[in-house]
Image 1 (cartoon, helix red, strand yellow):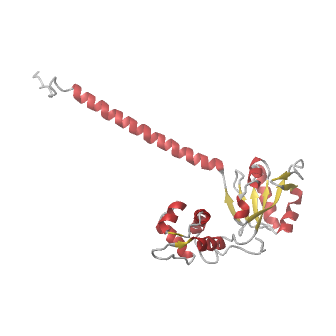
Image 2 (cartoon, helix red, strand yellow):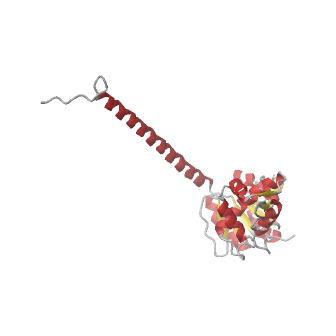
Image 3 (tube, helix red, strand yellow):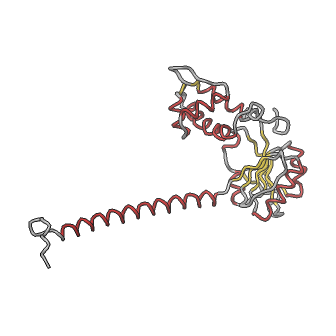
Length: 255
């Protein structure tokens, strides 16, 4: 079986925009769910709703793959699963190393979705000598002293960094020097890499902060709406108080 060392996904050579590439996993997830339910075909509207995009954008994305569906029938689910998997490079084996086996690294190692999506955890690596040899998710942890050898022996081109921020750049440099060309970074820091190396950053605290912003804005809008409603009510009360006993505005008495 081919490894990530010798093969790259076909998307770049075919000129598929990065925004489209970022949406392909969303389509694949929705299609996989349909496939598991033995759904044979799906319309662009149904698939777009399941993926959380609009149908016009979905049809444009699929046009880059050369897939246009059949009028009145829709898209063949199984064929699209294969086609998108091929474009993403998921029809081959991608050995991955995870560096940093703390709580987060251990959770990633135990994630069961890697194998079904074309990825194989080839090694777990940590700087703590007390972890060396201990199994996590059935894989013995290896020491960072052996990082370069592990990369070479397993033909690894994708590395996952789950270390503390202070150690992330050094680990990144060693991964790149050993031949890793794609990095998924969970460390709360920005990594500097040379041209030709792709980095995807996952920062849970930033995502939570963005959600906090939206919650604060919604709370502010609700407060403003409540204040506006109270002002309208107060205005109506004042207007009623200015009226006479029969509801008429009292005449202004001459000075």
